[in-house]
Image 1: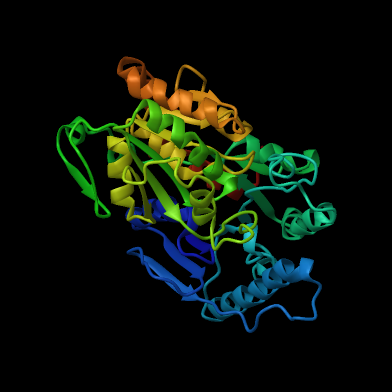
Image 2: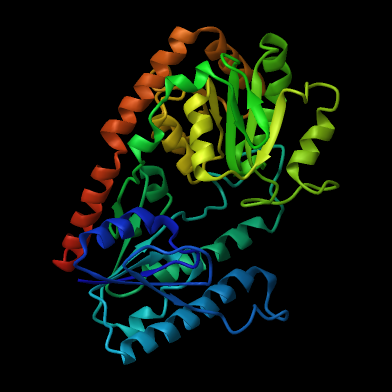
Length: 412
C-alpha cells in the first residue's frame, strides 16, 4: 500500500504507526513535513516551506487561519510534485491542527483522508474560564470561535474521516461531527516504561541533579511550566510538602515557553513568576528545574518517582500521564474531565481539585508517608496501562481503522 503522512513536525503523533508500517516492509511510505531532525528507515521525507508569514494587515484573530492556509498551499505543491512523479497514495494520514491537509482533496480527490482532530474550542466551557485567577477578556468568545476555523474546514472535507485519542476530546466536537470521528486511544511502550526497583537503591544523577538512594522524590512534568498544566498550583503546594517531608527531592521537568494561554505580566516566564511569589517559602536546594530532557532520562525519572503530580485544565491530556501510569507511578492528578478518563480516584491514583494546592500537597504527603498505599496505586495504574494503553492494542486498532476506511465505512 501507499501511505502519505503529513505533519509539520515530523513524525508528530504518527511515530509508532509509521514505524510499524515500515517494519512490515511491504508499503511505500512518504511523509510531508517542514524541515526538522529525524528519520525513520523506509520512510521517504518530503520537505515543504511556506512562501511567507501572515500579512501584517490581516486581522490579528485571522493570523492562525492564514498561516494554516499558507501551509495548505505549500503541502499541496509538494503533493502535486509527488503526483507528477507517479505517486498517488491509497490513504492520507495527517494532523488537521495546522491546516496542512485542507487542499490535498484537490490533488488526490479519490484518496481518503484520516485526519487527527485534537480539540474543538468553546467559549463557555472546558479550558476557557476554568481558572478564576486568569479571567477571560471581553473579546475572548469571538477569538475562540475563529480558532475553530481550520477545525470546521477539516470537518467539511469530502472523503475524510477524523480520529481523536480520548472520549473527552471527541465530546468537545459538535454532536453533528462526532459520527465522523473514530476514537483511537494512543498507546505507550510498556517495556520501556516498566518500573525498575533497583533505581531506588542507588544514587541517580540526571541533568546534574543527584537523587540519593532511598531519598523521597516527587516529579512534575509538562512541555512548558505554565498554568494550563497546573504549574502555579503545584508550586503553591510545595511549602506544605517540604514542611511535612523536608527530605523530598522535587524534580520539575519542562521548559520556560508557553504552549497554551499567555505569558505572565512583569516576568519573563511562569517559573520566574512563581519563584518570586514564593520567595523565602520553599527550600530551593531540594527543588530542581531540569528543563526539557531526553526521553530516556524522563522515563528513568518517572520509573524512580515516589509521587508523580499531573495537573491540567479541561484540555488535551499529555502523553506523560500515560507513561507515568505505565511506570507504576503513584499519581496525584487533577479531578478534571480528561484525567478522569485515565485515573480512578483511590484505585489508579489520587484525584484532587485542580484549584486547591493544599489538597495537592496533602495527597503527595500521604503517598510519601504511606508507601504501601503508594505501591498499591502504582501497581493498579500499571495494570490499567497494560489493559488499555498497550502499544500492540493501539497499533492493531490503527490497522483496523485504516482497513475500515479503505472498505468505505464512515461512521464511528
